[in-house]
Image 1 (cartoon, rainbow, N blue to C red):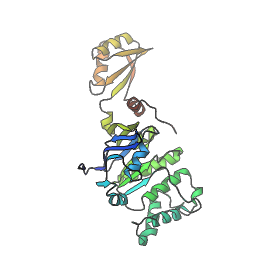
Image 2: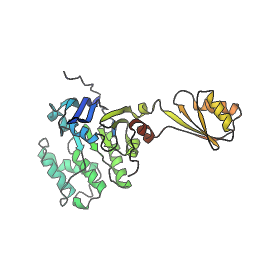
Image 3: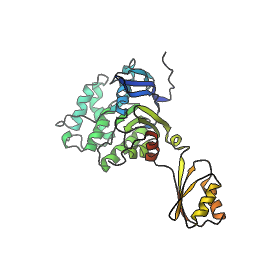
Image 4: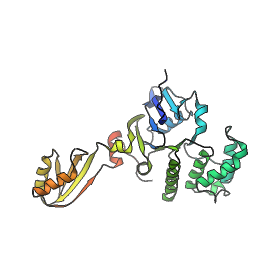
Length: 316
């Protein structure tokens, strides 16, 4: 019996699995993507992200489990869901010796849901939306990689969409191209479109997303809003002082183990357990001369390496 889907979710999966022989490339995924979110689907290369996306879009058979896309069951109701979904999967592919505008005209003509009467106006509107009006007549082989990515997103936006699925949208881009795509994604989210971004680049996910799911070896190991995933994390305290021994003793009164590192003391403070300002005031009151301190939450990289045991790319 199909599971009832909460309407707050643009993407909802239950036990989603893709098997190749005895190996589960995607293993019992319960994915929850809230409507209106910028959702980061994060994981090292080979963790199962693209396979998951292909099942969501009906491009790969589902071995077991259930998928709902904008409230429609996949694959049974894929004809209802897909016209409301734009996707850029595994990079854009265009005719290199046609202009950007002519490419979009061809792609739109191949869409049986696209009304030909409004084709020209919709293509021009999509090009304007991604900032390519001035380059509309230029042949695509002369486009930069960032321009090609934006043209791919324009193609996904030729029709009104409620959900946009982007697989590694900034992979291989230079900093300027990355900023262009990032700003475009933010502007689309403001319009109320749900954005689902698959990436192995931590910097992109950290800067743009409101919600996350972390994949490792075919499984989701963490999922929720950025705030939820940050809650309960330990904070890294570095205390600069000449009174290192006294500082360590003072931290012990709070149940915190400090480690002396030269002329500083390092410690992990459970978030929410104690107010950092209370700890520092107590140390000063007991005679610790505090020359400076830093209190930092673990980086996204540190959190996810702990979750997956694998590294992520942090630079392109």
